[in-house]
Length: 259
Length: 269
Image (cartoon, rainbow over all chains, first blue to last red; front, side):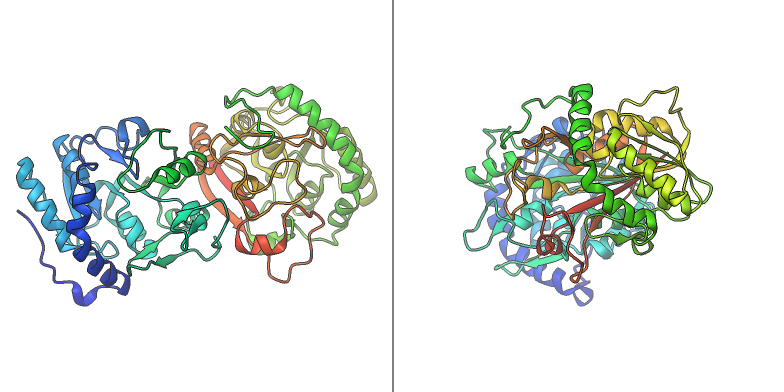
């Protein structure tokens, strides 16, 4: 079992340190809540929309794949089972412990790396596909991370990630702990947000994401904005939130390529 | 689907000819209101600038050096962008769907001595004999054909008209403002009132004009489908001390917090 030492703590950014502390403490509870929903065929986001429906990843057999913020590595295991050569990276050793246990359970082995996505310990042009599902694109700073991803992608390679839409950020009512129709937060200046648990999440406006991608030589392929099914169930969001997300995108997937 | 006045059709096939007639009538009626603003731009009093708060092209640097480029002003209105671009050394062709707007444009051509060909035509329905394949280096639309005609018709048309390496730059209301602006209301608010999903064809009850917009993901899907590479999405933010816009459908305070206007630039591969 390949696993790097958690030896980068001294070099961690402040947000990575905060997020590591949170996820190390929360991991077991998180896996108990969501592990079952994360199983099965590859699927994205809060309501586990099948990749077969969204058509984001397609056939991954034979590809060198990096999951950034793999958590329990359920998604990576599904891709490994479909013939991808997967590497999983996560900032939380506790999450990686769950990933290792799952690898043993499924009899699949691939490298699991402990580190933060803003500093990737991989040579240039190592991967055909970098992806995450509410992983590093949520919890790592995109301004240093996207250039790192561009570096480790091969020509013709792709980056795909699901995360909260900017609209999700604009309309979240902290007091009500729910999404409403009022614009409560500005879009200009959107960058990071620290929640009550101390985790730091990152996001940008669509224009700023596009500026960041293109500045790193990445080409915009898709921005998938989709609705959950009316009767979709989620271990992450309640029914009123599903109704909100039927009208306005609460999650989205960027797909970009390295020409 | 929901949202007041939202067209129930979600299919890309809208009745383009009927919409063009409705918009022609609406813009013929509005044309006198646009003459004075057009004159300020034509005269050079207002330098090349974008959007409701006239943000200078010299700061946004969307177009770069246009000298010698074949440019299509895609829904030119009073032709102020055509005048600016002709002055800057571009070879401009302009068209608009509203004869009254073109009449203003012709008057200013005579008054200011700036000449470029103008045609009466409807975006999305351009005659391939008059508007040839791969004949433009730049297509520009500021609240023009990319707003007032169906993007499912206009984007393939723009892709057809552009040379390889040519660019399309268009300014429109942001999708966010679109869904915060109740149809029939004079001003947008800070509350989501229209659905994002299915956003496409928007009928203004007051004058039956028909505007179009899409969610950004659908714009990107259409760009890629037609071989257009995304260069940038500029989310315009007016300066805090911007002079009031003569268009009152969105307040400066709103536009300082959220982008009221978006400027896409894409390039034909």
